[in-house]
Amino acid sequence: MAAPTVGCGRSWFRARKFSFGNVAEFRCRKSLVLASQLFSSSSKTVAKQNRDVPWAAVVGLEIHAQISSNSKLFSGSQVQFASPPNSLVSFFDASLPGTLPVLNRRCVEAAVTTGLALNCTINKKSLFDRKHYFYADLPAGYQITQQRLPIAVNGSLSYTLWNNQNELVSKTVRIKQIQLEQDSGKSLHDDVRHQTLIDLNRAGVGLMEVVMEPDMCCGKEAAAAVRELQLILQALGSSQAKMAEGQLRVDANISVHHPGQPYGVRTEVKNINSARFLAKAIDYEIQRQINELENGGTVLNETRAFDYKLGHTIPMRDKEGKQDYRFMPEPNLPPLILYDAKSLPAHASLLQVVNIDQLQEKLPDLPSVKRAKLVERYEIQPQHSFTLLNEDGLMEFFETVITATQMNPKRVIGWILKDILGYLKRHNIMVEESPISPLLLAELLNLLESGTISSSAAKQVLEIMWNEKGKSPTLIVKEKKLELLHQSELEHICQAVMDSHQKEVEAIKKGNTKALNKLIGEVQRATNRTSDPVTVKQILEKQLLLQPTKKAP
Image (cartoon, rainbow, N blue to C red; front, side, top):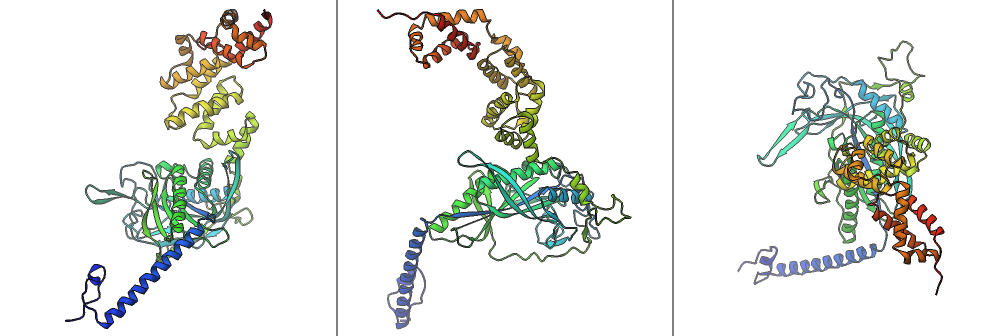
């Protein structure tokens, strides 16, 4: 009988007879299995030991900001969000033969301005390159970018966040470079018809890629850095930076290692368009890598996406084999030359060149300066200035209220941050969507400041205003009869409450101050909360002094 063929699984072990070679191979295979088990046991032991050693995470970001410009980077096509598909496409955007790029001056100035705001060195000479890859939304088969010599390098971004002790902490992340490049088109996947549709409206739109060094360690830090950059871009006018519209997209590079050891293998989480999702994606990926390593596994150098519904990152493609983009100098674009006051040619017109010094002089107030001015002008706390500026539209809301009310800004800030922002957070809506406008809030605060209503009545009115959009607080106060009572009427009610609560009155006279709060609450209930608690307290204290103490029998 012929010797059985060596196979795998159950069929290999079902062979009834073995030749000498089969037996030797069986023993060899058995020893390999034992060695594998031993190695696995050893790996688990090492992994178990590593669980006692702390992990450190490293996070770097690549941020693509769409430049605010009427036309694209190298063509005259209009830039407009949510236009009909393929309605804003020039011959160059579609890569028709014979078309040539023409550099958009506005995009260059936006990149230089952003570099100056981020403390970068502006390269007076920068170069354009072709980055080759093939995908349906890139009709030319290459992207024009700046790989060898970008427009700006070696900058920094300072940002602030709350630590675990609820304290404001300032941090800095280094900016490696800022480069100009084209955006690609958009692929729309139709799962029902099993086809992919291409919209080239976005193809060729000017982008600034801001590359941040791996100086961050968690999702909270990355989200704070991106939010600060977003505010800077909006202040400069370089980009509208609306993440919901894809005008600011983030790629996060994440790895973990033990302190003192080399950085671990990194993964890249692509195309995150929300600061909240960015923080969640990074924190999930950090924990996923730690769990993988502690269980004896390995972290793959791969590209992943974030599924916001699951709250997980999911694999997209392997990056172990480095993709060859075959970079080459862009033959149709000469070097980009910039000037400063010293190097500006005498015969040059400002319409012909980009002057770095002139752009430096035109820089507006950046977020850090705006916060300092808010603190100085309104005497508010520094942490309040961060909240005002970091929430879209909240600073404008606050300043509109301030101009329309007589209330002290310190009190106004409390109503906005605690009440208005609280409502917005609970209903998950933006400031611009608030049913309570700044002028209506100012009207309510004027009623409170003038003594027309109490603070508790103002809270009631605010709730009604939220539920009945656009309704005047003055009308609500009149309909609900929430005006403050006259002094004489309030004194009469306070006396009646004291007469019916003699036990509490005696307790107060014996030094129990908590009993006074009960009397104030009873007056508030008796007046349907139309009385001012401070005024009620003053009246009660005065009447208590006038009331004789009962003698013990």
